[in-house]
Length: 287
Ligand SMILES: Nc1ncnc2c1ncn2[C@@H]1O[C@H](COP(=O)(O)OP(=O)(O)OP(=O)(O)O)[C@@H](O)[C@H]1O
Image (cartoon, rainbow, N blue to C red; front, side, top):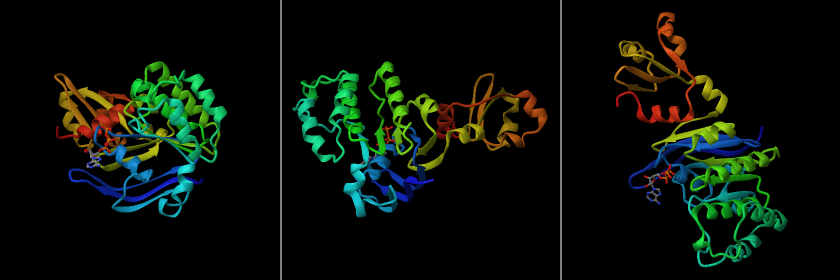
């Protein structure tokens, strides 16, 4: 199947941070979630994807081509939502839309109007007078109104109330019904991804931890709980992360099949959430 995003050996260095040799692919027709703790490099990765930042090493291909070959064409085919507002704050939504729409070959005024009604957007208000959530809704309406093949959203659900957050997830699911469309979005709300994502890419401290199909991740990881005296036995399984409590321990493991049956009988075994996977990976064993 066709890759819509191909990232090979991507590196980007700042004074105090480095995105290190990140490589992954993303197939057309799916939703991929990008997760990682604060400062992991999610926005940096997305900015590199959008060519808003020069990369130091590696290659990024979108729709099989690079920004240096075809940046205008690539940007026509992407609907992008930034993590902060990039609109003209002193202009109304209507005026902002009039400035932005002509850049897009496939701008669909009817679709945009439908979103303004659906999201209850106050088109006569200035951007600076909107709440954070309203700005996000406006950004989402703009990004979806030129029928993009790839939608890239940086933290789209931040600042949204739970009602609209659910509506947005439904809108994303609706978009993906068209198998030629793909969605790539970063979020801290991992439960959203558990609901709608097909693939998860996890970065921590600028490094790729994994980029995998969601179902595969949930097959691979297990959260085990047990009494403290068994903690040593778990350590021999080289867990991803361990947390000791007053009465016992909790650990995230990927190779439970190596544990002997006697040990298994004494453990309580659960399927972890994405949040558990993130938490224990970042925490590690030594903390
Ligand atoms: N232009 C820049 N110059 C220098 N450092 C930068 C720049 N942009 C980002 N950084 C640093 O890179 C690191 C990663 O930031 P980034 O915004 O990509 O993380 P993030 O995963 O999106 O975090 P969050 O979840 O908090 O939004 C941070 O330490 C940040 O300070």
